Image (cartoon, rainbow, N blue to C red; front, top):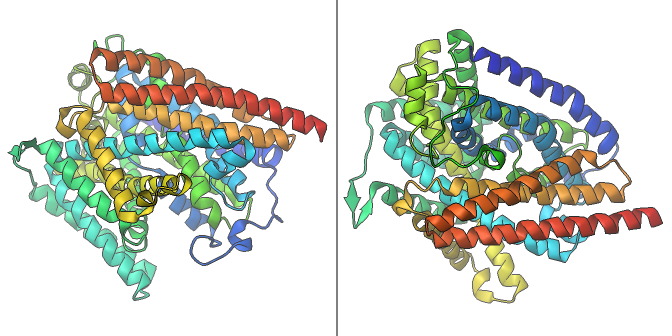
Length: 556
């Protein structure tokens, strides 16, 4: 079967979701009001609350939420076959992620641009907010640790990715300085920045860099993990205009270019899908497809992390309420498109089933980012004539840069939570920027090394990250459901995905707990138990909050 079929399915499903389902949500559920004055206007401060054109805001939002997760998750999940992954990405994007992201943005905009965490305390109750903060911290801890490991492994698998990955840091800082301090035109800094980035990709392809196999007792993966988190700690305390914002921008530009090139290559090369629709012989250590598929692919189907972005930053820049449809729902469609590209690269980017099985038939989980870079580079070489080493470097850098961008923001958000805990519990030492950053980085290093492999080969964390991400998504949907009940609106659009996520997350955690117990991995056992406890509490809080909201709605 040709991979073009995947493209057709994705385009049709996502287009139908946006033009029909999101319109239904906008008109019948959220009832967007063009006359509603958004917080970007009522609370405009020129810093956080800034009315922004919807096209620009969509680009910013998409770049902020599109990390390496929609590449890595599908890249692992195709081990069960391409059909389950394809169905979950399309259905999840249209009916789960769309309503989650769109709804979080709308609810926050209707409540002074406050985050989902703040809304949880007001709409559901303070206990739910406590659960929310724990889940957020654990999620960020795993996001940062997993992405650090993924980048380290990819630097080793594709050493040509090292130079462009680190050059882009300097490029981003120069862009930030030129825009904010020199007032240079955005067009020119974009042209210069992208040119330098793609020039660095060529340099990296001809000058690969590898670390020594051992240094101070650390293998190469461990060395990279330490380097990455030293960088992330420094980046988290730099002004956002100097690194975070310009890096997010340049990453968005290169993502659009990379995705366009990959999809054009698919249309021109029409590669054959060599992976099976259902894999009847997955690796012996692979967990059952149900429920693990639905937490392995989180971003790209539904992601709780998107609710943090939508309510944390995007809602403060929403110019008009109807724009929430394009920014929120279409943002999730953009990530679904990236996940679809990952499925194509990891199932049609191999010459034969034997080659695919040689990569995926060994041990679970396979390195999804590596499969993306290898498979995608073959498709681009056949379709566009790009040299294999250049194409592989470009795709590896695309995945690495988004993982690194998420690390930058993730460590910063972790620091914020630690500082907030210091304020809540009156612990002055935790409120300081330096101490909280050290704790954030230290906890990430502990997980990265404690999970196994000296900082490398710890993709065993990925399903646990997926479960915490889905739990966070369930909590966001719970808040939205209670809010809709209070407004006397239909709630099936949020209750169905909420119920599905809880039903899949709790069994997944129990299955993972058994695996961690057999491996005697005590660190992950503790984290699993914490998340399992939070899942149960979320379910109980949901039932209690729904009952209260219905009684209040009936009495009003």
